[in-house]
Length: 348
Ligand code: AMP
Ligand code: MG
Image (cartoon, rainbow, N blue to C red; front, side):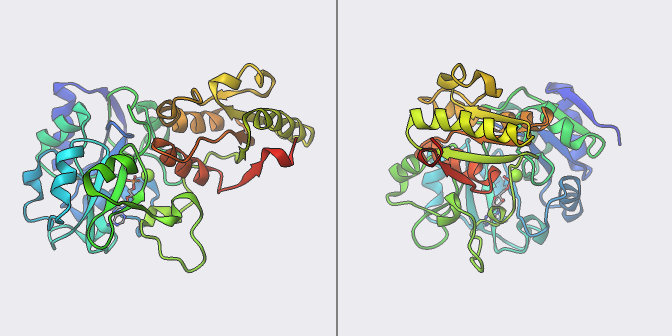
């Protein structure tokens, strides 16, 4: 199959809408990451998403809408949901809702809730509006790879597998949406993202964060959010996180790289802008300023993808505080590193 990458404009949006109505796949930009969309009401079309990504069938998808009226007949709206929609839609918040039988099993991996989001990106909105369908869309990467934040990332993973990629430039947030469950008990963040716990608490009162956000699932533990089960967001190289006092971390990063190189590895660091000069010898990948966790979120997936392009096989990374958007950063970075962490003071 020939994959077209087209700038988003009236013509390419009309083509996207036609392809989606025909049951084909279209990759499109959102404010979080690029999505790989199909008609959420067409089970065959949705199966093609899983095939193109190599995604396990038990990992459910998010259905994207541009207008709340599209929820009619698809879901039952939880009591707490309207306040969330008022506050955060359109935007990077996904809300779980009990589904009706109109939502095919393949979208939800058989779960009785479906994840719903209204994106704010103008291209996503225009495409959703033009096709008039709810669009099931996971991130447009091959399963296990970092999510794509540019059309070029999508092309690298999906060339020859899908007919169309709409190019809307780099994504704003750079990490996937926050997923929240308000269907029972205390509202719970299943996956942290651009809408933070503090922002949600302003609307809902107390909000919990699922325990598995910052650690691997334990043996026998049920995944509240099925995507948490898989090795995710990983470059080909082995990532190790280095924690501790700022000065110790910078020294430890250098020592660890030197050791890895001595063992024949191609090593590098992922570090804050403030530390690239001190670590210049170790091919520093600038993840943004220490004081700008939004910038780190925005750059993270592109950095992880670059490591592969450059053939790095051992990577040592700084960490951010797991607060605000930093919680989402550490959730993704932790998984990229399979939660492999070293204390800097044990090295220096
Ligand atoms: P992706 O679209 O690749 O960002 O993945 C969507 C993620 O949302 C999945 O990995 C799941 O963890 C989560 N998700 C989607 N639907 C549900 C659901 N019904 N219940 C719990 N988590 C869900
Ligand atoms: Mg994904």
